[in-house]
Length: 179
Image (cartoon, rainbow, N blue to C red; front, top):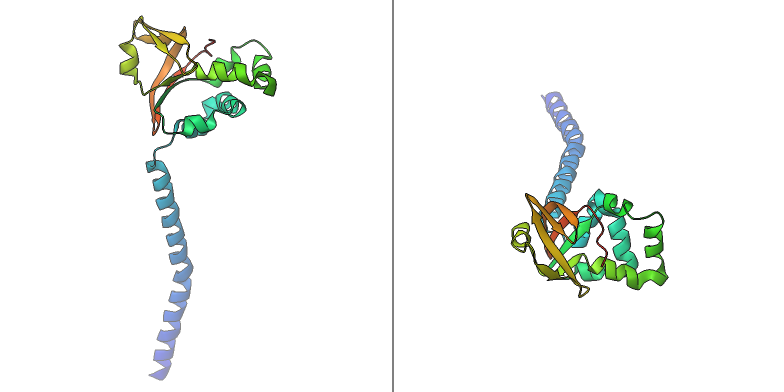
């Protein structure tokens, strides 16, 4: 009888020892999933969205060079007409490198702030502005045009709309606008 009890206790201990790493592993997985869900549920600001989206590497580098990251991470609201890397590649050869030089910070800032409207304007709001000009963050006006189902701002076509951020909205454009 004592031998049976010892065997049962030994088996129970072995099961306990085997299951402990599995329980710890399951707890780790659960914590990772909870952390991931928190990240996904927390709204991101305009800069965080642009940085995490692989289409805006040049834009985010330019924002850093111009010292505009903190501004676009602030409360806003802002509407950013964000040119993709493909849009930047349409610029003449060497133009991006030239703009990113410290001595050209004022020119770069003027160009980038020409892509920012102070206020939140969804695609529906922008479409209602057909034929009108809006004042951009650099103080210059950009004309909105609706042609069929397409919206243009200063000649740049809006190709993706209403990427919502906690401090505004992003509309993706196919061309870098020059003030």
